[in-house]
Image 1 (cartoon, rainbow, N blue to C red):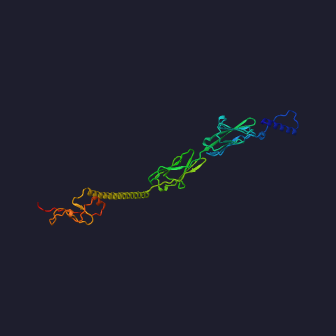
Image 2 (cartoon, rainbow, N blue to C red; image 1 turned 90 degrees about the vertical axis):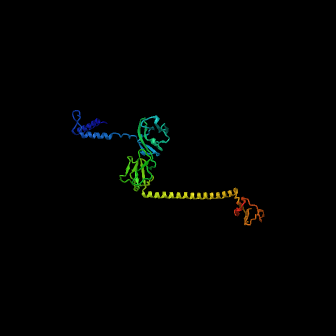
Length: 372
């Protein structure tokens, strides 16, 4: 019923009420103007009488932001009663090459399309499940519902997959900086997209200091003229829309004068120990060489006696009396070697070498001052 019909109906009702009160008019009934309040009433009635429209098909992604490796549901809401079938496509249009899966409700027949990866499952109410999602699954998905009157409805859903952040690691450009001298640059890695970085020092947020500077992306922290107060430990945190990860504590090994003196003493101690070891080895080697050379001298002397005997020496054993030469003695008589008692031939020199207790006597022959 439109507004003109409603107006005509209200006009007729008003005319009838007037005729019943004042009697039947002699002429045909005349159409009168409808007051504004009655027109508003007619519009209200029309609004009240309008039949409710059917709810529109919608889709919902659960969870709206998915972490890589998790499962995602594309829920179908307000599906028509007794639909003939469902079909899910990758993208925002009906393309058979992008068909993921379709289902005919009457026969419960499910058909996998070219875009099916083996991780998708379709429920009887039109909901699509995607298991173990990856970043490649990010994008649009379209649901096509065929109703019992062969009419179709379509609705598009979105999936956003974000990577799970790895454990960050802090690296430094200087492992042993000097206090009040060196500048240290700490870097939080690895670098990933759509990631925010935060820093802590000694389990507290970074203090306001002119010697501390963060890069624009807050991934790098610079410490100017580092002191022992800034030795740490430092912790870096990375986070995105689906995950949070923290690094292991990192402590700076800041050097100062006392530390340098301690290092000098340690170095000197090591040098002294090394020198003592070298001297000990040299002493042992010198003793060995000395003893070896002395032994060679003794052997060389014995060899010389063997090859070059003294013609004026006689070799005797025990307490043999010394033998005189065949010259003239003080009595003027000559004594031959054969007339001496217990005379024995001289022992070979090699026997003297074999028996070190042998006594060697030398009889020096004095030349007589006899005239010719």
